[in-house]
Length: 229
Image (cartoon, rainbow, N blue to C red; front, side):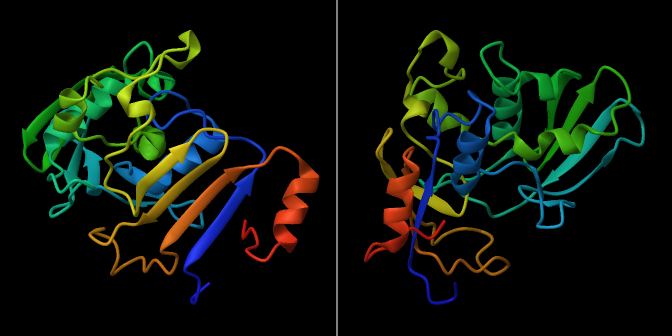
């Protein structure tokens, strides 16, 4: 993989939407993880490790609260800074009735900004699994969402569309270049990604293609520009 430039990625199912809080299912979440990031992520062993939060611990003064320390110097794809305001906004957005992630946050009663790089998440009782529940809850730029009418998640079940269903402004390792639903989604490496020194990205471009026909996938494997995954 060290000499790879373009990764051609195919699977049987398409990502249903680009809205990171609309649909919690395999292809959609996998694609979202390339462009958006959670506070906490899992490494290749399944262990929880820092992502946009560098540390987290139960509050010393309240057994029903977790304190998260946020990573400094992180920017979104458009250059805006990642701050605690985005965490408050994102978690409340993911708790919205239209969100497919609300069950993961069902114990959350409030999200409080303590300062620009610290948040407190209050739950309805001691909740030791809250950090694990956050590993698929992505952070969004509050200003970008508000400027584009994307304050609430897309109601996918009702057939709703929306700006965030077709556009992305995350902090993740890849940036959306283009998307043709059911045809092709193209991503390019985020050269300003905070994690480049820790996670070198040999792949500079990802071309995701949903291919439902098994024979077509085999043909792609054998083609001049083969499918890599």
